[in-house]
Length: 150
Picture 1 (tube, rainbow, N blue to C red):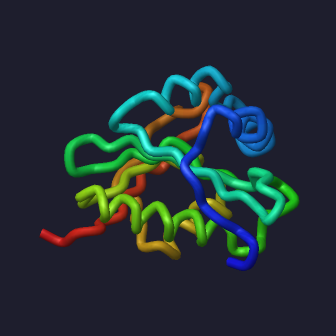
Picture 2: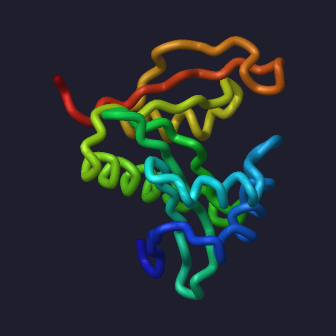
């Protein structure tokens, strides 16, 4: 990806992350929630920055034994549709493997066709549905990506 780099998320990134979070999600994480996650040993959060060091996307996951639970993946609105989501997911998979993670799990709104398509492209599969998971109204698909076959 030309002029794009993925770096560990820092407190200085949180204003931009919170702004993207607000664009991407109805009830996204707050700056304080991200700040708390940055200090946990099992929490891994990264930002995608452009050539001017501006945050244009991010992802995070929490390591739980040999599994990872994705917290969020988002790209700034004006940068969507340019392959940056793929870039973030590929990086997440590589980092998860390097940490000894076997499986990645996530929840996604059933109405979020773009995200579901992205995850399916990266070999995530639907393993269950959480009824009324979002705001007590919308179902979530639980998806799993096997990184290491048993």
